[in-house]
Image (cartoon, rainbow, N blue to C red):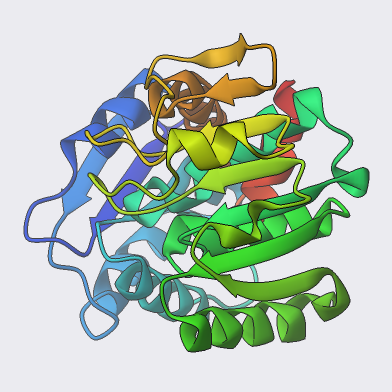
Length: 282
């Protein structure tokens, strides 16, 4: 008899996310262990508990999910978890704080349905945020040219420098401020905070954008005129997606990634590996 699939949900917030717990349950996890207020300083004992309670042959039946609203905090916990492993004593780990990795993967995989990304110039609004940075990274890796926008040009440039150094694709990535850089773009992604409009309808209508994806579901939405339920809505000018329209794909990716954790004990699911899972689902 196979041991049950156990998922440790490690959340950096005061309360572990009910959203992430429900998705894990729907993905077929047998036992969900939730921990809140997790930090790099207190996570080691939780990881050791996952590593040392089963033999190496059964460690693929235990996995860790790192979540919470603070992406930087989740990344720090993720890095500390990986440092705890040695030899065969390891379990698979998924990082999806604030849904940033699954959301970015969903947005880019939907875009690829309509455009050849290697021939696309894309504007990423609020590109310095956690989702925006990941959308930019995934677009670059697909061969796109990316304009990363922020209200502060120096912050946008710093993020571009960091991404360019990481990916070695700085020649296809540039920093800009606001939505003025939309001229000449094929696609626009709004990745800002809830309730912040980043692009007005008139500016979008005057552009040559063929695909617009808004990832903000809270009014006012990020791109004026796009409904949160739009899912590949075709207008005379473009294809449009709202946040909930992308959300169905995000949920499918999230569940598939949780299932992937239990294929082996050495899975490391971050933005890039989750995007690879998303491409396989299309």
